[in-house]
Length: 265
Image (cartoon, rainbow, N blue to C red; front, side, top):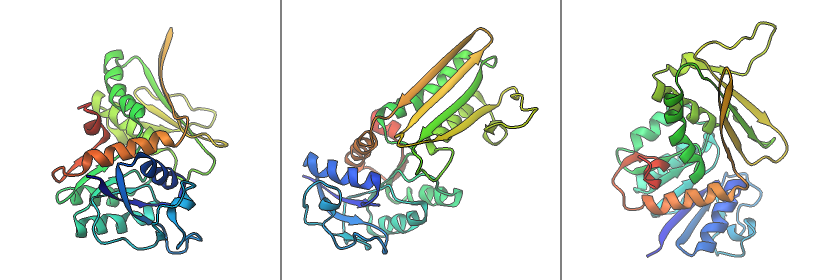
């Protein structure tokens, strides 16, 4: 039986690909495509907006009744409305919206006591393997290895550093016993910008149409080890999100991650 899918942020770059791949897969019944009220394509067939052919679902600024799972790749300012709808209607939620405030993340955690939720800064399968690896590598290499994280994205990305870069740093801190707030250095400048021992440097590049590149550099005197992930298209993230949505339907209320979906825990 097909899961009833709600796509939030449906006319955005990610939303269009999620709609298109969901329709192509034949594994979902797309019941709604939600966008902000002032979007110029409101009222149009969402499939046509996504260049996927007609799907007989209009782009709308309201949520439908019912639904099994919502996939939200909108903007932080829209996240509360999505969470509230899912809570009120017992709809499972896959949220890939980055740049959420600490209050919004706390709201997601509270909501997960009543509905199943997957929140992830990156839905790529390969990137989630990297999330799983970085802490282990940092532990194996030890304190003598400096750690730098460099993330690259397209010129239109609003938040910096990326949520994925922060997740990489958080996982390293957790594995090595570092305090996150005291360990992170966001870029460097000035005449006296020597790296601080134990710091994790995080650097953001914004250029052209880069889909997403994350590199974690471990360096000591005499050698360097780099772990790198490159996304070639947004389909990487869209397929991961749809895989997560399929997995989440029917699960007990809890806050899950892509590691749960992939069996990495």
